[in-house]
Length: 524
Image 1 (cartoon, rainbow, N blue to C red):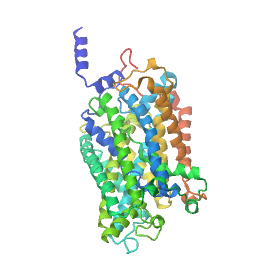
Image 2 (image 1 turned 90 degrees about the vertical axis):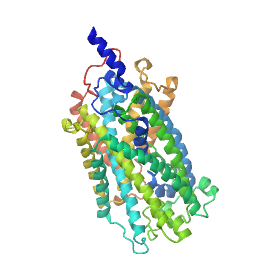
Image 3 (image 1 turned 135 degrees about the horizontal axis):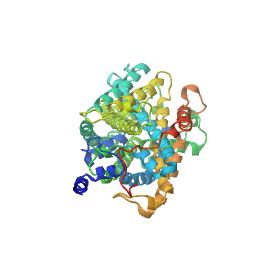
Image 4 (image 1 turned 120 degrees about the horizontal axis):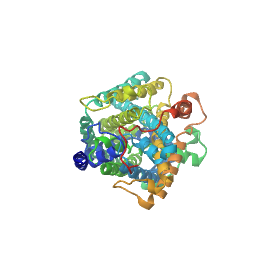
C-alpha cells in the first residue's frame, strides 16, 4: 500500500510530458531540460526564413513573379491544416519517435506495425536528405560569397569548381555532426542565436534591399505579372509551369515537426510541442513571404539574372539581385556580400537543427529495432545524453547523397525532392490514421481539435498527396541525363527495397514502437 502511494506521489511530481511518456510505455532516457523558447528556436531554425533561396530563380522563371508570390499564400493556407493536425497528435503523443510512433498508435493493432514501418522510413529518408539539402544551399551561398569577394565572374573572381563545392558540402555536414555530439543545451543555445539572427537579419534584408535597389519594380509587376519561359525551361503548358513555380513555397514550409522530435527533452512537451509547431509556421510564413517580396521588388533586369556571363555566373539568382542592387547604388558589392553572409549563417543554423532532428529520428527508430544494427545506433552518450552514433550515421548517408555533385547539374533538385517527399510524406501516415480512427480510441492532450479534426485532417492529407506528387515531376524539357530529376528513380528503388524487406522479413518481427514497460490500464 505504501509502495503504491509512493509511486502515485512520484507520478504527481513528474513533468506532464514525462508522465504521458510513462503512460505510453517509455522510460525517460534523454535529459528533459528544454524550454518552450529553446524548442521553438530549434524548430524555427529547421524551417529557416531563407531556405527557399536556391529555388527562387527557377520558380520565378517558370511562371513569373505573380505565380511565385501568390503561390506562397496558397501553400501557407494549406500548411496551417497540416500544422494543426500534427499539433493535436503531438499533444497526445509527446515522444521522440513522433510521426512513426503516432502512426503505430493511431492505426490500431492490426495496421499499426505496417503504418509505423512506412512512416518511419519516409521520415528517415526525409530528414537525412534534408541535411544534404541544407548543406548544398550553404555550399552554394558560400560559393557566391567567395566569387563576389574575389572580383565577380566578370572580374576574374574565384568560382568554386565541383570538387571544391563538394568539399564545402561535406565540411558543413561534418561540422554540424561534431556540434551535435555535444549536449543538446549547446545546440539549443546556438539555435536561440539562430532565431534572433534570422528575425533581425531577415528584417534587415527585407527592409533594406528594396530601399537600396531603387527604383524598384511596380506592385503591378510583382503581384499580377505572369510570364512563362518555354524557350529556357522547355515547358509549354501554363498550368504545369504554375505548379512548378510553387515548388519553392512547398519546399520552404515544412520541418515544423522538429518540435515533436524534441518532446522527450522538453519540459511540459504535451503543451510546448504544439505551441512550437504552430508558432514556427506563423513566423516563417510571414517572414518568408516578405523576403520573397523584397527580392521580387528589387529585380532590375529579369533576363540578365539568368545570364551565365553575369557577375554571379547565373548560378544563384538572388545573389545577382543583391549584387545589382548594391553595385547599382554604391558601385561595389560589399552590401551584397554582407547580405549573402546573413543568408549563409541562416543555412548553417538550419542545417545544425535538421541534423539534431535527423539524429533523433534515427535514434527513436533504432530504439524500436527498426534499423539494421539498431543496438549501435540507439546508444546514448553516458554523460551528454545525446545519440552520438545516430548523428554520425546521418552524416555518412548525407555525404553519400551529395557525391553526384561531381557529375550532375540537378543534385539539389533531386535532394530536395527526396527530402520533401520523405519528410512531408511521413506527415500523411499519422494524419490519415487520425482521420479514419474512431474518436473514442483517441486520448487527447491539452491541444485538441474536437469536431474540427476530421475536415482539418482530410484537407491536410489531400494537400500532402498533392505536394509529394509535384516533386516527382520533371523540371526541364526535353529530358536529358545531365538535367534529369533522378529523385523518382532513387525513391522508387529505396521504397521498393523497404517494402520487400517488410513483406519478406520485417513484418514477422517489427511490431512498431517497443515499450520499455507495459502501459498503464486504459492508456492508448
